[in-house]
Image 1 (cartoon, rainbow, N blue to C red):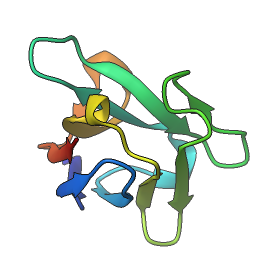
Image 2: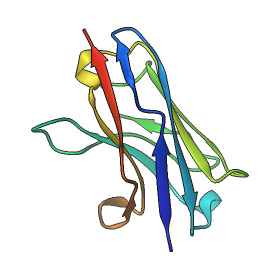
Image 3: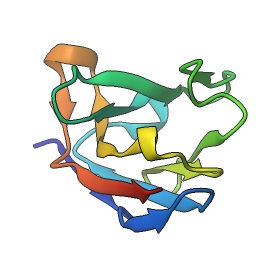
Length: 114
């Protein structure tokens, strides 16, 4: 049974930083592409960043230079370091494996105040 558990969301002022974590179980973590998505109120869910072991990560243009995705395969955990946060980063952030028809975590709320 696949489980993805996100943590780290919070309310932060604009310009602040947060680190999100996603702990995975039930998968061979090191073999999987892990994605971070977000969904803001009234908007579609979008890919923020993704990581495959041994491959350069990918980022949405809107977060390049501010967000960094990393992973610890020994801990089956993927992280999203978010710096220079903006109000438009406010969203529920989800961890994913397997793409749109794969598995999702429950989400963690990030609110950036202006």
